[in-house]
Length: 530
Image 1: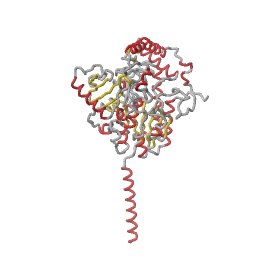
Image 2: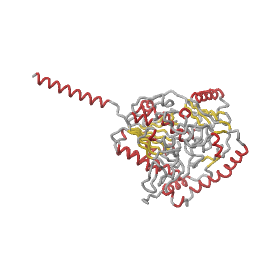
Image 3: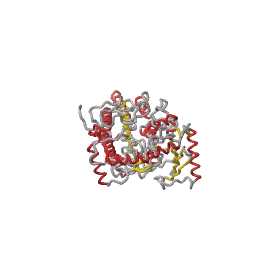
Image 4: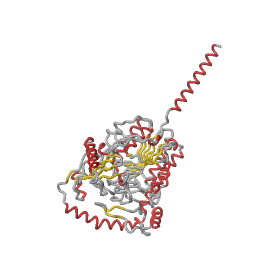
């Protein structure tokens, strides 16, 4: 009996231990997968769900309907490299030092641009530094498989995705644009083409799906960084025709551009080539989301979608309009920095809801760590906060000042300036004339009424706070160009008004012409095995 009793007790003990262990495992929070989708130069008004009259984005729209939509989401900068560094580091641009797109001229070299500007732009950090503990490095150190596909533009060789925490890199290198265009053959040392005419956005999507399918049993952090919709803008004949006909049905405006301070800016969305490029990127997003669903991973995968700066309304390919928001890529107004900002977390009551709490690219880093049950690193992501309390619990977080610093000119017509947003107030400080603009975004979201002169106290207060912060982070500033020639600048401005503006109108109508036929081969978009 004693032997039987002991055996029975041992059985009960082992069974209870086993049950206890299973219970403990089931109670441990499961690590979610993270899929981060970053578009390039994609504006807030470039989506169907926000009311674009031309572009169709059904897959982004579907994602938005299932996500928490942050209606006041901001990029880290008005141009690409600084914004991308902010996502990777959780820091504002003046703090991490990558304040301009990597490769742009600065100092006396700016004179090579022959734009005859008053200032010489500041120098900047030219590689994402090894001292930064990137979000990919932290995820990898905590057991995540890390994958990168697409545009990197955070340094030369030695500062590629694989040097900053990504185990796999498909297409990320020093270039900020799709060399060779959107149809194979690609000019990319990190991405060989499979077929001539293969589409770049779709290829990056398929590489992402392939990674996901191979790591179904792992926790993964996949970063899909489209080159789209950066110039050169290209599409297929079929998509061009679809959107050309839609633009004609909508009605062709007499004028598509007007002059901003320094360059023409597009004021209508009627570009069928750009519309086709947008749709192809949206198609690619649909492929990736379908791949998640097919793998059965959609119930445990957080999806983030955003862009690195505003739509290109001025400069580059002059592709789109961000109206009613003012400006676009390269500009300091909302059209240059306000972005799509979607976060989908499975099984949350917040899905399909909106938040008007102002957020930035720096907030992704701590938010991802929080959801991955990884200890936050406030000394690293110093300018970001976790948005999980908003998404999971609908909490109201305290307002904090947000900062942008761009002591450069860029290619889109914007001026060297710095910005602070605190609450509903936004102050822009211009370095050319040492003046400020002040806007109340609650009453004036499209920045039409400068309140600097009518509210000098608020202007002075925010200016001091901005300057104190820039001093704290050792920001760099532009300097006056002693060789500035106002007469040469006047000649340059006249050339822009008299020649570039009419040329852009001609190009716009050519894109809309029934006989439009680029290169007689539609940028090589027909798929062949040759």
